[in-house]
Length: 212
Image 1 (cartoon, rainbow, N blue to C red):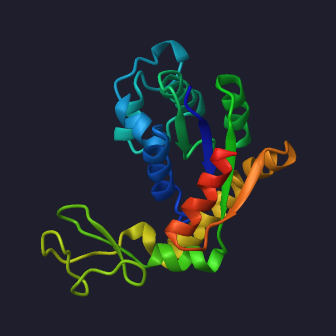
Image 2: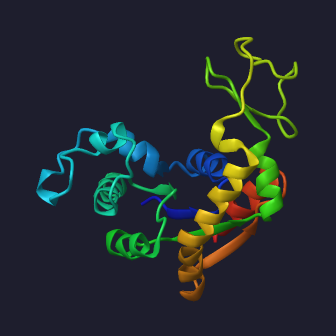
Image 3: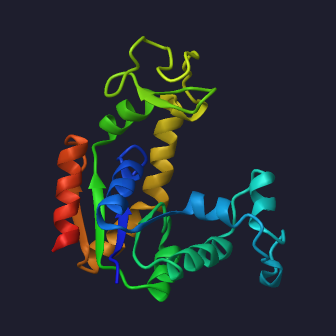
């Protein structure tokens, strides 16, 4: 039976990078709400009495998929996984309560990173509009400044990576998801890991928690 790991942390804390690495290291499924939603865009939710009959219709309209639909999709993804690293869910206390009904967790890890560090990380990201490659002006720069190593296209800063937008994303995170962190802390199951080390240092700290 594979391990059930929940990885929590604010935008820019490195959840995506560390989740993929954990999944590879321990032979687990990497379950993210985004991937789960994309994989189930055509799921029939007509019996839920929601505005649309499939998750894809919400996504195509640029609207938030309701919690009850996200819950059902995450439940499906977890039930079909032998073991998993869950990343991006739960985003609020209601989802955390739903998750406790779906599954038992072996480890809940929170990546702790200072807000100013998060802003530096997120505003420094540059992406290739052609091939999708991602860089960072400080931590992972391309060989030639502003130019994609893979295809030679000019790199761009995404609209949601400007400082104003990043600080708003962090504010929304604090409002909605910080209570989830406290929920697990109060339950005595949360392990906090310093997310400001090198990716290797952070991974080793998380792996230690998972192996205990």
